[in-house]
Each structure stands twice: as structure tokens, then as C-alpha cells.
Image (cartoon, rainbow, N blue to C red):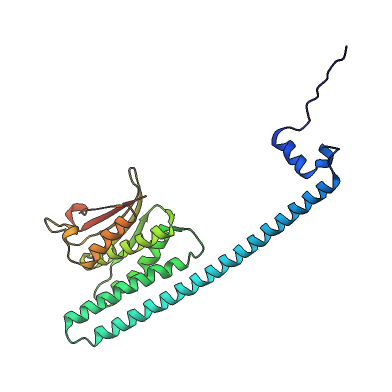
Length: 260
């Protein structure tokens, strides 16, 4: 009477398949040596092709990065030129109202240039430390608030640090700049920019001042100024919520942007 014996292979599943791929002669002694060498050659050729494709991809990415850097550099130089031209035109304007409008346009273009230039300090990064970024913007802005020597406003940045996508940071930078500009117009001595967490939305950016209270019936949507329209458009772009309230002790105003 014969007894059949079965032995489990020491390797099984995917590991066995991998060993057969690389060592078919060892796993299956009857495997043809010529087929083995041919398979190895094919694998080496495939690896060489993959290596070449990866190298070409790296070269393409480097070229794209150089083009982006050149484009950004030209953009910043162009914005600086626009600011200079608008400022020169405001000085030679025939009426005070025209001069005021040209100067306001120059300040807005300058704000765009500052936002992008600040982000260049974080080139290559997908996220930006928002509090630090806003502190840098406020340093730029504080130099403009007392340019006429009439008064000096204190700009404070408070709250927690938030790491956020650079695209969102750009929009928040524009929003903060417009809100700070409004606070400079109406504030008396202190403007507070605050970053905090929010239980429902995620995060909150607020800008408050200690100037006169908001007028009764104030409605940002009904404002004719470009600044408030720009703020609301940018808030919609990042999927945020925009609100406002009276400041502490009914002094000044507080504007809040909720975002995630």
C-alpha cells in the first residue's frame, strides 16, 4: 500500500511568486536557463526605461520651476512699476479727488505686490505659517500708517499659529490687508489682528480697531467701496464666512472671517 505524502512549500502567496520571478531556476529546477536569462534582460531593460523616464520628468519639473520663478519675478517688477506710475500720476493730477483715487489705486497694487513678495520667502513650501506671514504684512503696513507723521497706530498680531495652504494664505493676506486698511482709516491707536480656532468652521481671522463704532444699519454688501467688495469676493473664494460686530465697550468694530 502506497502512502502519498504532501509537503507545504516553505514560501507561499506573493512571496513565492516574487521568488519565482527572480529565481525561477531555484524554485523550479526544470526551468529553462535561456528563458531565465531572457527574463532578466527584459527586467533590466524595463528598469532602464523607467529610470530614463524619471530623469526626463525631473528635468521637466526643474524647467517648469525656473519658468515659474522667472514669471513671478517679472510680475513683481511689473507691479512695482505700476505703483510708481500711479504715484507719479497722483502728484501731477489736476484735482485733489483724482489724486486721491490714483494714490488709493497705487496702495492697492502695492498691497498685492507685498503679499506675493512675502510668499516668496516660502518658495517651495505648500503650506505657510499664517500668523508669521500676517506679522510680516503688518510690519509693512505699519510703516505706511504714520508716513505723514500725524499719528502712529499700533498693529498687534495675536493668537495661535496656523499652517495653511499657500493659495488660501494669499487670499487671507489680501483680506487682512483690506481690513487693516479700513482699520487704519477709522482707528485711533490700536489695531488687533487675531488668529484663533473655531469650533464649527475650523479657524477664525479677526481684525478689530478702537475707533468710532459702526453706524446703525451698516451693511457690507451695500458698501460702494471697492475694498469691502474685494473682501467679500475673496471670502467666497476660500469658502469662508464673513461677519462683523461692534468692538469692546461699543468702541470701534470687529470683522471676522471664518475658514477651514
